[in-house]
Image (cartoon, rainbow, N blue to C red):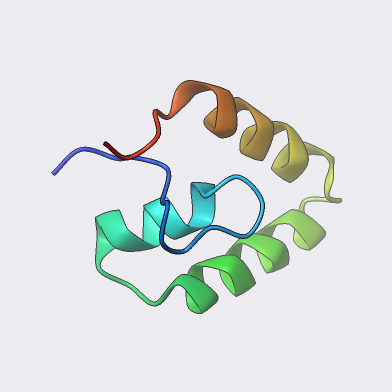
Length: 61
């Protein structure tokens, strides 16, 4: 199953929801893990990664 941005579990761009659907995890857990990883990496790299994924990962058909 390819990675797509989620349309069902979308808050901002659907990136975390898409990753959660791809992994079969709860979207809330993926968002919490993403925020923790961003904070621990001083937020800047996490923000850049999210924007790049938002641009690169296609929307779900």
